[in-house]
Length: 449
Image (cartoon, rainbow, N blue to C red; front, top):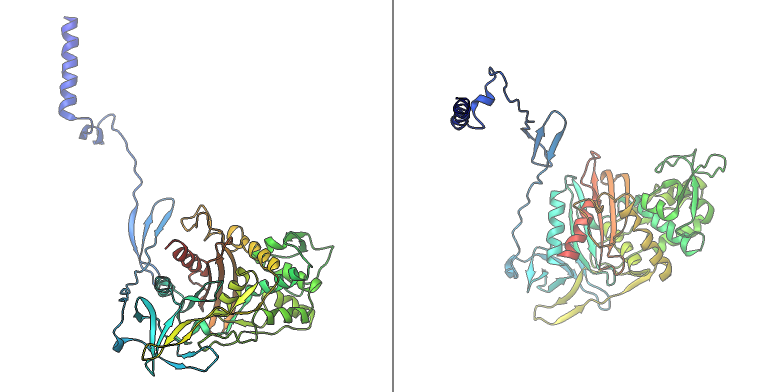
């Protein structure tokens, strides 16, 4: 009887399990004696409107997740050959013995034989040094940037060939040629080069200072051994753009005359010889100590164009030899005869080869531990694995155009630089696409395709 009773109970249990199932309402019914309680965090999607991104915001009890989706910019792929009737036309001035002059700057939308080209008003064929794929990428990045004013210039360091030039501005035409942008911390490169060239400092030289990394005023610009408790090497200061360090370097090792000489050597207040209307960059070097220190750190009356900034980066990457920027590769007349062929020219030597190479290696700190480290971090999806990038950033408010100026110039790879880029983004709201990100995208496109 006992065995029969046990068998009956076992069969009953199996039958009940078969009828109800393991995931039946028995476990979920709240009025049962032993209900199974399950908890699950629910994320509720909420539409999020933004002028910059079409985003979805996921809310939970702990965090808010933003999933940005950039607004797609659809541009048709240019045909290998643009019909002659639809090709861009520009003015062309040819003078014997000198480079041609084109005006206005074209949109680089016409193609002839797969190359970027345009027609002159006299039906001459003008072929440009523009890389079609890189130009397309530059224009996409400019279109996506939230700032109203932005420009990108890419250049080949050894030859000065302009590989891409894209821009937008509701106020200023030919923004990449415009020399009204404050140079900001880009001028620290001139200060560093002058001190290195004179043997006054080394990358490992330690400079004592006080105040914050970006603080520079009348109370902390002069050295004071009793108060200067912070120390930073010159190489680290260049990467982190430490303003007090460069003020001290100028006060101790550079005179206004010396800094003015190197500013002119780097192309300020000189004609770079581009075949398009390019405004000359301008630098005023004060005689007083406070003005000198602020100018050396990037706060002075120093104006520069994106093309000039790319040329300076090219000169440093080209072992100290500043190449003449060039946009026109060759010109054919209406009969197809070659009337102009560009050649590589060196405008001047910025520094000795050793100094330029040292400065280039110091600039790697910007992308490893400095102001652009987040855009180039190995932990980030934006990393360029195995590619060393030398760079410098700059940030300062300007008036022409008005807004916060955000600079980024770079060359890569450091061992054998193949591309130099300059990016300027100006936003009167102070919120904008970061120039470092745009520059990194350009480098990746050129080196990785």
